[in-house]
Length: 196
Image (cartoon, rainbow, N blue to C red; front, side, top):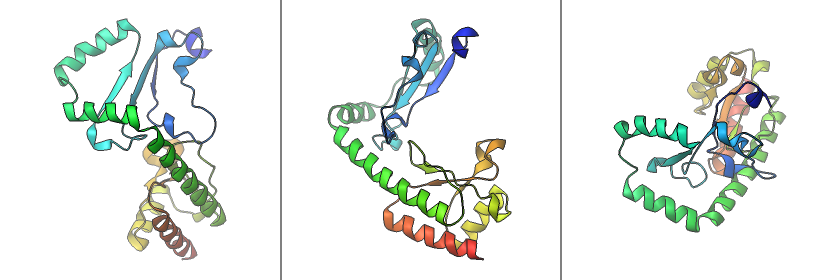
């Protein structure tokens, strides 16, 4: 493996791991000889819908954690007690809610990806999270132009793909965590936008 061969340190943010639609998520830290070179970041904001609680955690080899704690102790004392209690409750009793939410997202994903493809905006099926990344190159607009005009003319918000780096140009990111009626309305408005 490249990381082992070149003695690289890996930082992995696995905040969406519970929102994997098929198969089981496998962390890079679980691969041979990777645990000792991986900083694993996770939290409760996505799978447990606890964004406002601002609680997460890091796992790393002891020598790395020691250095991380030196920085952390001067930036923050600890997560609020309320957030800690909520996180414990989520871990103890939230599995069914996570499974239900994942199924809703899966259905929303299927709808939005199918809709984008039918509208001529090529879109691959995401394997996790709650975002689609349709290609908007057929419109002749840049990602920013597409997103701004869609918002201004039809009140549908998408994020220009280039916000995620130069490779994202020609795409936009669409969240499908809204309700199905809202997604249906958004698709109708996007269709009108594309029709000119």
